[in-house]
Image (tube, rainbow, N blue to C red; front, top):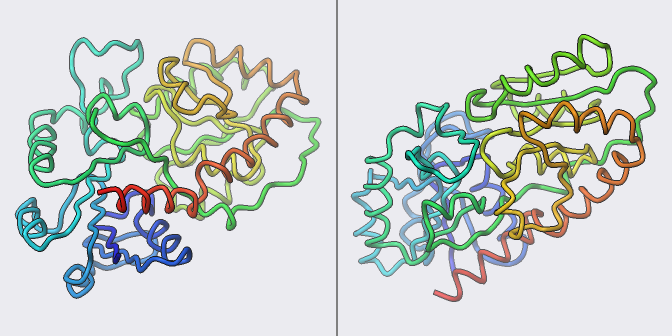
Length: 312
């Protein structure tokens, strides 16, 4: 079985998974058509596509604007539509949860186009995968397989001892969907009182985000989506406790995730509790690394996908 991941390397998932699957003994390659973290220029490798048995297509995207789906199917390839977030998430009136990232974000307002893309994939795809369970609302037939990270490349930070304010870190590629404004508002009184500091990095490189996070006592992920992302996963791998908004109906998908739950209205109170409870922060820190190794390590996730391919 020869596997091709592509064409979009969202959160570096294509390259991470291809590398992991090669390391566990399966020919797997990333073939992209857009800049990625490790490649500055557009590139494509048609020979790899020609010999592949499995096409794992990320971000509900194909190489020739949907025209190649029928061609790939005629070539006998198994097609996976690998969904990551805003590729399939869109805003609709009447969504049955109180916080809605899509309400704030213009990129999720294009519901008709996204529905057309999904319907086109449904004609040809052999399976759908979502990386977060909230996306099952939009792709209910999908399998939930978590995002993958290079756990071995992330070192757990040494125990931090500081008598100063709690150092909080937040990284944001999209402040509207991440709820960055809610985080600022909630923490403003604590910052003014000298109890915490808040460092926000926006649109930085992956390396810069990890470097900036290394001194943090606490990380805050998103406050609107309802599930945790790659940023939270990497923070857990580094032993940094994470606060995130997780919708209660999604908790059964990962009941043991060691993330401290909060929403925009409870965030300040949760942070105050953590300021006073150093023991809780250390406990969450230790559980985070173990959880990531068991659930999000690239070899673990790569193997889950291999089993899916083999079942088709």
